[in-house]
Image 1 (tube, one colour):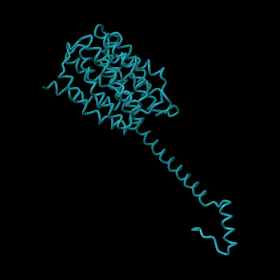
Image 2 (cartoon, helix red, strand yellow; image 1 turned 30 degrees about the horizontal axis):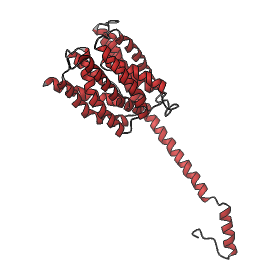
Image 3 (tube, helix red, strand yellow; image 1 turned 120 degrees about the vertical axis):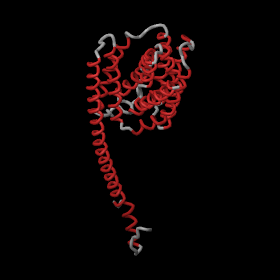
Image 4 (cartoon, one colour; image 1 turned 180 degrees about the vertical axis):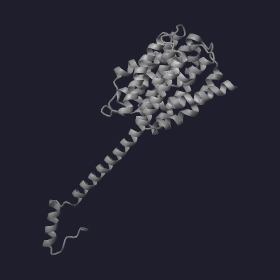
Length: 335
């Protein structure tokens, strides 16, 4: 019973993070299952079965709050499902220990880029609103789906930073669309695991506990992402990616850093991350004040222009005045 309560709390926390940042449900939950002694394939299968329900609830919540671009969901989700099914089949027969550090290096570079970009530049609005190309979304979905199934998580860490880096979507739309399309990925990965493994090693009580926690957190996270400033979200996402993948690299066979070194690196990352988030928040406040001032100035200019048009007499007004004078009475504005 204690384990089930722990899993439910982990599912709640993981979905709260995933729904508001667009990543980390699989990474958080898989880490816990592996710590409990579950083999990688069974752990990934358990997580993806729970995600069928949590991603459905999360997608509906994001849709309700206006965080979803359905065209992006379709273009990235379908290839993602194909990649996830293939990844589940591969993981059932093959270890991915060698591939994990390589992917972590790529994600670490993306995370560092996002952290710097959103901390110092905010959102690049030059491309905001432009359609995201299908030739970009298709391969992205295929790779992210494969990584997600083989690593027990990865759809968000791969998909979210890539879409954010494109500068064509608001952060809340990126997160909502990635979370919603993950339903297709979770469904395809679960089918792949069930075909390859059957129900061997999958504890359905654990699936239910993770699902329950995720269902509670899904609407809260969807509301949260709509109200957290985009610039702050970008810094938060970048920090999560940097920290998560640094941890993976330092614990991998490539580096295998001793505990004192790892803890020192983590402390440095936390300090830099906290400073970056604080700076992003301060800049957001400044930008908001400036935008409010610009909006007020524009509104004042518009009202002044309308006033000039309203009181400037034209040829018709002159003709009415002349007719009134000829009739021997003054012009009345109420006529």
